[in-house]
Image (cartoon, rainbow, N blue to C red; front, side, top):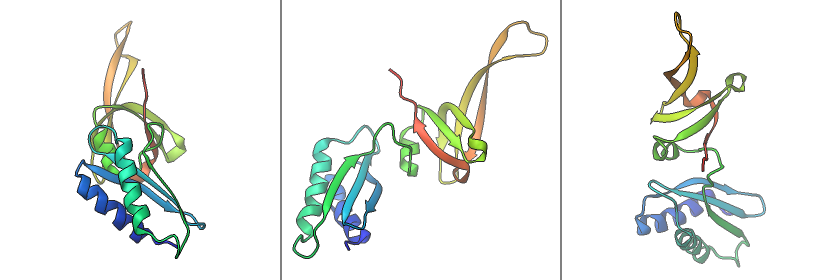
Length: 158
């Protein structure tokens, strides 16, 4: 079976050569040596050419005579949940939807901060305040620790 460390080393070797702020989001190797590698970029989106370049470096350095394998290198999809801190940092200032572990509560709002421990979401909702007839927009910040989050996705709007 092909080892994760070997594939990671080969991928990072090419990623470092490209020097475009690319990073590994996820690497999975199934029992049948099916390798799935997902990449993203710190600023902007990853180009197809970058995925091809990383794929070729891995493919040319693994020997199919020793072990046959299938390789799939792709970019992290917009509809996929965030899996690494760099994805949170990249999307600061954008709308996200967070599903918490506790009661599967959903929080939607602007991602304001992200670090190793927590994220901060700014939400807006209309509320009726005491002494007022009309509802007004109320802004509040919700702090969520990473261990409280089931998944976070980017809100896609056109």
